[in-house]
Length: 376
Image (tube, rainbow, N blue to C red):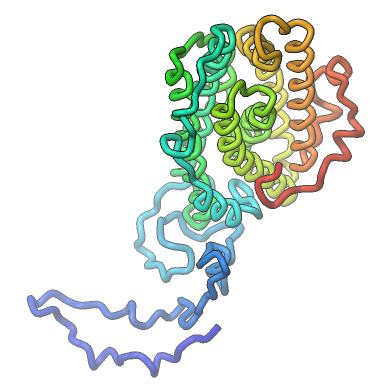
């Protein structure tokens, strides 16, 4: 880092004090007394990333920012800059150590629900299978947008010094808009349509959106809600009747994995740096688990998934429901493993019937280590 001496800059007395129209001029911005002058970030092979410019004090994230303005972190800030009234002013409130990496991944992997899905290859399906696809797409169109509404509710309350976290959440909002788009399009594109919407999903979504703190909201959304949807996407090869649906699930899965990875690491950072927040998270998950169990056992959801896993109504009993049970076991196992990685062990507190689902707590404890990227 090189800081240029004031002698290398124009002297104040050599510059005009008034504009041609007589208005007073202020040249204080030339001095840059507190800013770091002369820093030259080096682009990586991918280009100039947010990690590349996190150099010097520009890369330092304050634990408790001194201001609540929208001034860029690292700028010289006048004392009279307007206070924005942010309420999330601690780093533990929003930060995750993988935030910058996930933001770069998100902007590099944006896709189009219009162009990148082979809509022209849709095949006519048996009525029972098409109905099941449309029912699942109705549900996913409904639940996906909560993961856009939730960040939008909290972003404007986050201190602007945590700009990388806010930028990542902007990509999550765009991702979820695209997911709602693609599932709505699939429901309508093959002669089917949007089917039943019942109270179960709405109860879960309301629980998430009404969380009292952002950290509780993140636990309910990223560990619980999005985590369960992520496992549906991961089972896409078994659920999808054609390559079109498989492509949709694969594309959505890469996005959802980023969101879950951010939430897992955010909660881990919060608990490691403020252990008292753990009970706050547990309280939210105590309620969230019960709501999710009610949601997951709703007949519309379970029967549509069973029929798709069976490949049709003929084998729904001997094949569909056993595979659906395996999916449920996978979802809860993954959820509990995410909690372990986040430093929020639920194994002794969960209301999930582990014995009934055949979940071995030791296998959960032995889950993979914390992921920095979108692998949670």
